[in-house]
Structures are given as C-alpha cells and as structure tokens.
Image (cartoon, rainbow over all chains, first blue to last red; front, side, top):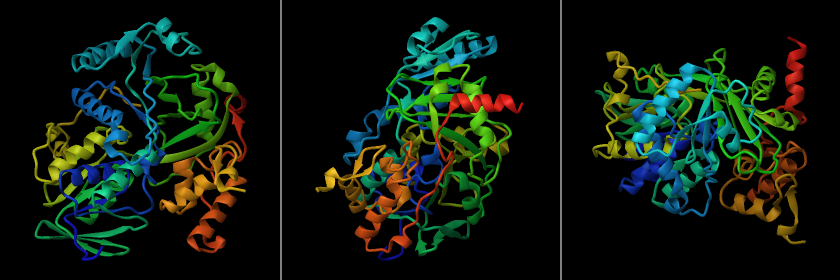
Length: 383
Length: 93
C-alpha cells in the first residue's frame, strides 16, 4: 500500500473474500485491500469437499445455490484468467433410506422444480443406472439433479483473486489482522502485522475465525468452528459421475475429475474448536460407512487425509450483512459447510451491499439480528 | 535436457517447466504449488517431488534451500486400502 488507506478492507483470502473483492471491483469499487493470514484458500475453502448442489429444502438456499452454479458455469469466461476451475457437472445423487426422508425429498423436489431446477425423485433401479456399483439394498428412493457437481476450490479462489488484481484490488498475503479500530460506532482502521490500514468499511470473510475477527470490532457473533475430516484415494479411471450423498449415513463421496475419490462424513462428536489435525478414527469410520453403499471402493488406497473447519452458525445458515452495532462492519460468515458453493452469489450480494446498492435478492432473513429475534431458519437437508 | 522434459512430480506428471511457470507466476511456497498443481499429492506422498520442488523454488527466488518450508506431511504414510481400514475397525470392535 502506498498511502495506507483503502475504501474497503476484506479480512480473509478464501472464496468469500476473493469473490467479493472481484465483484466489488467490477462495480467500480477498486480501492480494496484483501488481508490473508496465509495464502489464498489456505483455510476452510481449500479444505472443503468441493461439491456444489442446488438440492436444498429451503427456497432461499435453492435460489442462492442456483445463482451460484449458474455463475460457476460461466466463471472461466467471466474471469478470463486462463485458469480452469474444473467444473465437473455430473450431478448429485441423494439417497433416501426411510419414509421420512422420502417424504422430505418429495417436498424438496417439488420446491426445486418450481424454481426451475432440473431434478427428479427416482427409483433405486434408476439410481443404479446412474452409479452402476451402488448397492441399493434398503434404498427406498433417491433424488438426482444433473447440474450439481464438483469444482476445484484452489483454482477458483486463485482465479477470482487474479481477476480482482487485474481490476486494481491489492492483496496482502501472509499478513494477519491483529485489531480493528472503532470510534463512535464506526470503523476507522484495521491493524495488521504489516501496518495499519485506515478504512471505514471492513468485510469479515474469515471463515473458521469469524467470531475472533468480529470480536476485534466489538461485535459478538454466535458462530463457532467445527472440525470436519476428509480422505482422498489414489486416482482411477472415471467410473462415478455424481456426488453420492446419504443424509441418514451422514456421508458424501465423489470422484474428482482427476480420478481420485474424495469422501467425508458428519460426526456429531467432532471437536468444536480450532483444531485441524486428522484422526485414525475418521479413516476407519469412513471406510466402515462408505463400503456398504459403494462396495468396489474397498480396493482403492487412501493416499491422504486432512481436516478443516466448518464455521457454524446456530441455525447452520450464513450470516450476511452489516452488523447493527458497528457502522461499516460487514459479515459474510457462518456458512456451516456450504461457503464454497455459495461463493459467487455471496460475493455479488456483499459487493452490492458494501457499495451502497440494494442487493438483488432479499437477504434480510440472513441478518445477524435473526438470532435475537428468534427467527431462525431451518434447512432440512444438511450433512 | 529441456525443462519440459525434466519430470519433477511423477505421480502427477509435472515437468520442471510447469513448476517454473508457477513460481514465476508468484506461487513461491511448497504449500501453494502443491494445491494449485497437485505436485506431491500422488501415491508416492511427495517423497521425491517435494524436495525437487523446494530446490526449484530456492533457485528461482534466490533463497537458501534450508529456508524453504517443506510443506505439511499428511497421513497415512503409505496408501491403505479402504477395505483394510474397514476390516481393522471390525477387529477392534
């Protein structure tokens, strides 16, 4: 920085921070500094399962995801950086093993269809036509949306950053935010390990650290970190098109375009703190849960496992908007495991809000105030 | 030999030319290059390539190789079949 000031400082160089920087610059706000503690996508973004789906049970989630996926479909052309985000758009197959889930999926499909999503409730036999080695014992039904898929989070985030940089955005990587200065209820500066930046607008896009960053500005967030683990196998020839997901088993499994299989499960016992080590328990439990559904995977070698943080909110829905108590402090946090897939739409909405425009979708249900008012959102279809 | 014919990462088929392009584009740590190119993410677990990668970074950035962070080592140390993991769990149940 030449003059130590910026119109907007973005805390966090993950998908949310980099996408918002790009869309803000596109709207003409180019005096932006993105401050990232390590490197792009080094936190939750680069550790995620990389799936993107529109099969949700809440109208708002379907709309957010639909717009994000449409943006991802055209992102290589839009950003024009020469990078390929590796969008494998071969669907999500969601399995239902009890009547309650079938009933929920029937409602979800009706909602999704009414919003223009290509999706169907299908029979076990039809599910096996999509994934031929799927064990359909006990399976009652499934839903399939062919336009869901898988995207490379590292390349996507770097591509957004590169496109934003071309528009004039400055990035400070390997730089940590150490304080946020507030005077008379307004943001005045951000302190970093490489100096102070005077600004009146801060976007908190710090993922797993959202609560700690907000606390620097005196804003209390109800978010918390929760460890989630993933493993990946050696690559093999392409055999599985869609992400296979079972909410009852709490598992998801996808073959990446590169050929490796990536999988994880939701574990209610997981640590709710800043720990990203991986465990042997996870490896065994994952193998135990996935093989009954996809038996041939028994022959694949696991080559790596890792962990990352979900940034959980009390209702597992994001918190978007300006904090009521501090003028100029914006949050785009609490994605609860779905931040990567909502990156583009979140970036656009936050850019509109921060640049003083009316957001093109009503995001007031996602405000921080909803927790005080008790207006929690309930998404029925989460891992 | 030309840079495009010198292999740095055998598992992911990355040449010295590929790696040098990334370093020139500003990706100057092992962790970043690993994520953007998959260098070191194959079945060999980075045993050969990550040292070669560190050497390329040192050469192009003018740093000592001892000052190049080696990157995180992740389990398992050797590939293990999912079937073996599932059987292991059954045994100590």
